[in-house]
Image 1 (cartoon, rainbow, N blue to C red):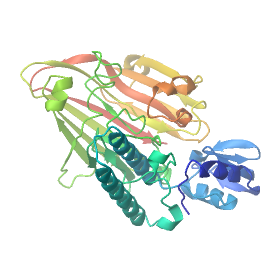
Image 2 (cartoon, rainbow, N blue to C red):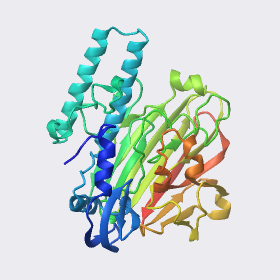
Image 3 (cartoon, rainbow, N blue to C red):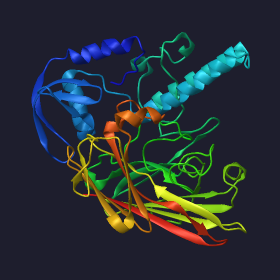
Image 4 (cartoon, rainbow, N blue to C red):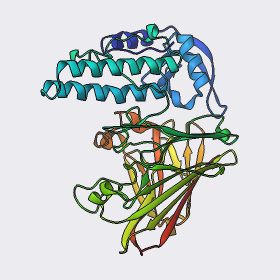
Length: 416
């Protein structure tokens, strides 16, 4: 049964986990490999079996649930509700800050609290979770330091910014399923049939859409990496903008489009149209097609990149193109002329291999912030760097695009 823990309850929960009795058994990971021994604890995202720690992420969700059941550890809230709770916790905190600053009356603040509390109840109801099992402690008492949060009235992954909520687009079929957010046309989940429903992409617990989210597959355009001028956002404007869904006329996949507007022109004063199409193929592939068009009267220079965050069991035990990688932090730039347009990422613990193929990229980036650079990544938890690795097709040097001309950039990801 799911639980929400206040700051006071969490230490007791951890103590309960650490003092759980041992349970012998065999536990099978995503690729069918077995780990046998005494399961003694589940803590900080790891299962302790015969005094060795194994990342929970290498086991299917059903196996994780069985482990928790053996130790009588409460099942975690669904990931969607955790994200919703965090998003609405921030809204409550802003509400309290406005009240303290005198910008709101106590009556208006109380009305906002009641509205968010009702939304949280609806979210739990839609998820089939009894409010009595979760409790309301902390949901309406953040100013008293009790922790907790509130959530929106939908258990779908929410894409949110300061002022609005936008829904998720989901595509599912025989090939598997994937989810994308309107903000940034950002694919944040992919579960291909080949992987038996296992998640391929990493997403951090804290994913405030509209900021630099370190997870999923961000689209970087019209620059990759550091901005051309101080004050501009890192990795361009596409990943932060709100894209519009585009009809596919019965074709498979999901499409989004983005046109230049007042907001983008304030940052980058050029007229453009972007379109991205994401499709699944067979039972093991995810294809991206990004088309950029210059709709203005003057040429502009643009660079681009796909920035996939692949889920791994341990970032210190991976290989790229067959070579074991050095201990993070890792930031390796290489040219497509040198490396070709297909790279492989091997999870040496989880046993999964991912192939990444670009179409016209001139460069590659291999990246993980490691423990040293994670503090610079606002939306990453202190230990989340261990759970992902990035292999990114990109073009770092901007190229000129003339008026009315278009360029096409493609990426294919395949799971072996």
